[in-house]
Picture 1: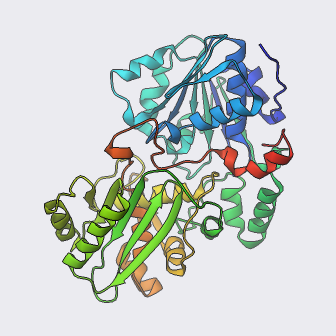
Picture 2 (picture 1 turned 90 degrees about the vertical axis):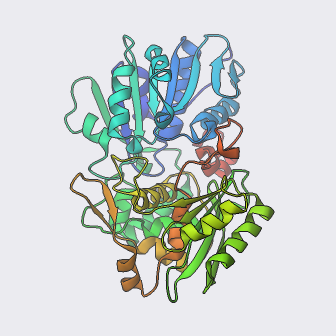
Picture 3 (picture 1 turned 180 degrees about the vertical axis):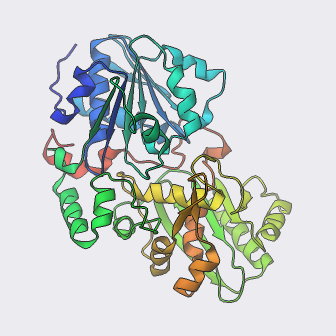
Length: 443
């Protein structure tokens, strides 16, 4: 088997050198956690026959997982002993195997297949629900098995942080790693971090140093993340098209229609003083011309009327009315559906992988204007839309339209398919693409 030099930052040595049940690495943007985890697992898989489970809370498709990152690293190092299959990765010499799952997709039958896992990698672990952890932890039960956890902390109440890090035992290793610990961090990211430090120290601590959000900071989404998302970097995506529609409620409110493909939000249309039929006609034309995988409508006031018209025209399989006050999918983390949609939007903007949104002043202001609170169970709540309107003197229609594109996981043709991108996470490799072209050892 061909020997290849793989350089992993020294701070990640415990991944390879220490035998311990829980290995938790957390921190801010640019720390290289995903790269270090991927490279370390590939090295282990070349040395011994291991079964690796790569897990996350919600996985819309195989490309929502770290599947692509692992495949990219295999190509980067020219590891010819790996075979990248449609839904797994295997080493043809040692017999090692990588599989990819979302906890929301598990059931009593397929959870049993996890029992033989040697290493479980939980990516974006801050999003794992308490219920998922209660199921997953005892299921990884093989003698000597390990659970590797990578996360960017969101709040003090992150379930896995409470379970692992608040009172760690001698079977737990915890390490914070930031861009300052990563010798391969691109200069552009260092510049962004230093700029953020000067302009907004609270954002710097959360985004770049991995601190949880300050409870006194009422904003859900930071200005830094919005400005970064507005910088041109993506001009196409073959992820399914998801359309969010916030329908005007009264007076000067606007009907906002947002187009998003994966990590690329590329179009925002706004209309005033449309009636129910006119909105339905516009959406009918969008369905015919653009063939979206799903259209999510605000169900308030006129929303159900628009949905009824679309359904009568035969588009009920594409359109879905969303009740902002309805139950969240992740009930442990979010108090209602609106909080969940905006929370997922926040995480999308905050992730290290690049995102692109349209340069629109209303949208930018909407995103940074929404304030948060928590219910008695510590779940995320948003201030009422009416309260936002009083403060910014208009309704945050554009922000709600974008948030609606995160109402539910979306699959190509409304079903999971390994050839689709779901909600469209892009490999971190693409974030560092230009840097890696000039230095083969750059992360």
